[in-house]
Length: 367
Ligand code: SF4
Ligand code: SF4
Image 1: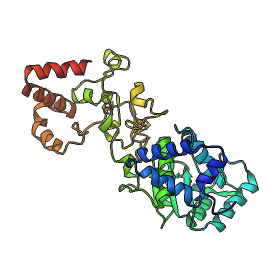
Image 2: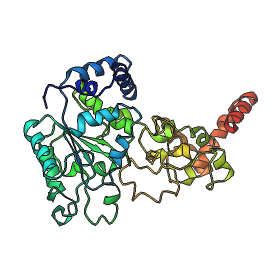
Image 3: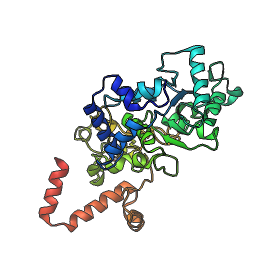
Image 4: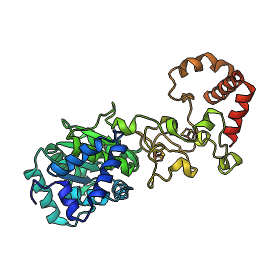
């Protein structure tokens, strides 16, 4: 394949129209939180830059990240997959297998050294010299380190590669290990979630290809544009939390009214992800909208932080407000417990309003 071939060349050959391509660029700019003008920059980069090789490797995992990625809402994602991934290496969805697949990997390593992006789904188990995950006849950890050495940048897809996830939960018999503990000296971008949101995955890849750099990361290595807010910050049930209206039992009257799931164990207040904004299945819904609490799947150690149906203790009931701690410290002794405190303060706020305002707020809450 010619090294000067661009992403645009490939999708045009696959029959994608100019209009559809422009729409993809616009949607990608929007999902990256960029101004509409950036759509042109994305379009220009994808039309003119040589295609960046992407190698996608799998360690201990369930392939849910791949499943999520290929179900991205935008129809062009299948072309992103075909054009950027399967023509290089992805041992789950590529046509090649066995020795042929291994040869493709070696070719990429030799011909694109320092140029390719290494995307990793799953993690390496280190016990018994890595024997719990053998890939191409050798321990996955060896293959991972070899490919990481020649990569320009590395993406850790999902909670397995980022944190360890279920296979690293206690007692972790295989010593499953997040990839940043076995790869040194390379930039690693973590895109956690079990799985990550497909549009987030596509946007991260497109950002790197367009701007030829990693997006801005937080202290834990996650792209800030998707992981700087908690599920709780944008949850549509938040007004019920603020009003102290909670589901007390599954399928009770409050559940039918769509009240807050905090008391049912919701991890939204401590989970950083974009589910309550981007949502899932083409933006149709997300777990809380379907009546189930967030279990914090994008957070480190989430399996061992359970059980999932026990309410969180000692969270900051006021969310992101800067003065929440001060308010809490002053009132905690009176009402005891963060939720009771918050409910009390909501009542205080209400009492400060005129009777007309109060009636209006109650109507809104009960609507
Ligand atoms: S606790 Fe959960 S359900 Fe309630 S507002 Fe926060 S994220 Fe939404
Ligand atoms: S709502 Fe919570 S548990 Fe569900 S996918 Fe999002 S982060 Fe994971």
